[in-house]
Length: 381
Ligand code: SF4
Image (cartoon, rainbow, N blue to C red; front, side):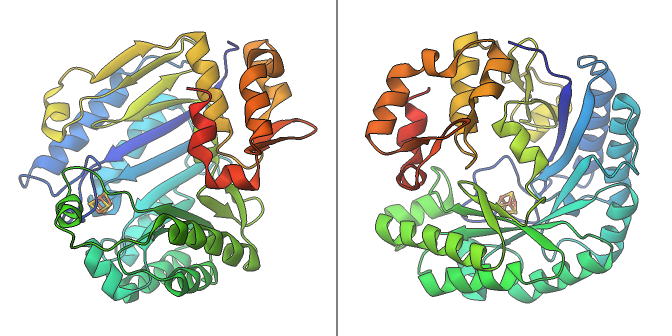
């Protein structure tokens, strides 16, 4: 597989004000007053000792969580400085997409200004719903008013590339709720990107218990599919094109970081549970998946080399998430092989089932394939 010189950086901040009822991410309130600074020190130590990827060109930096905006701004800055020193990139380089996730009600105007000054040029706001009743059901700490204030503060702080997260398939949510939310958030100044994911009931969450007791009435599959179609139609009406199954953007504002994951670009993740992928060696590894374990320096939770077969399968199913699909030329440049020879049987079957279409440059999901994408992905894993 051809080596790449591109590298994306991810930093995981796992702290949240309190746990949302549906969430099974590695996140939660700090367990002691000193845990955030101990975690910051562990992050900086991990960044300093990193010695792979010499000479790689950084294309994106992403601070995710958790709620990164809950962390004192000095800690965010200290970690950003450590990354900058280690990877030798410039804070003022606007060609590097530099994103930080914030949650409404968990970020101040001053912090937003400080983020902009330290080089962040893209903000991702966890809105999830514009309905206060649904926010309460989800266990979110914020109200819709908080979200509107955060979006306005972000714009005033100089962010002109804002992404908003919404959720569909929520208990009691209607098609009208979804369409209204998309219309409202895409009209806000500075909002150029929208991510819209379906609620998934994850084992071990309070939602899973409520669901098992019959207390959560969720939209059925057809309704949820209609909601997803409603998102796409409304987003398009507002000038946002769908570029991935769950992501929409104004022209030129597609997330470079996410696109990188779907193109199997190398990435280095720092922090508890953070995963990394080294495309030159086909190595995938992940840090200890607990906050205290990570601070203690516990062993990696995963470390393995992918076979070239696996890497090709990942390239296919990740690439097919994008509406542009998998480019035959890019596949050849990457693996030195022919896409239509390697996957002749799979492609033939998916074409016959109407789940993919063949274009001038390669293959992509059909309209039907967008609704049943998992069936397509299964063919390549
Ligand atoms: S804010 Fe996000 S990461 Fe934190 S608990 Fe809620 S869903 Fe999970």
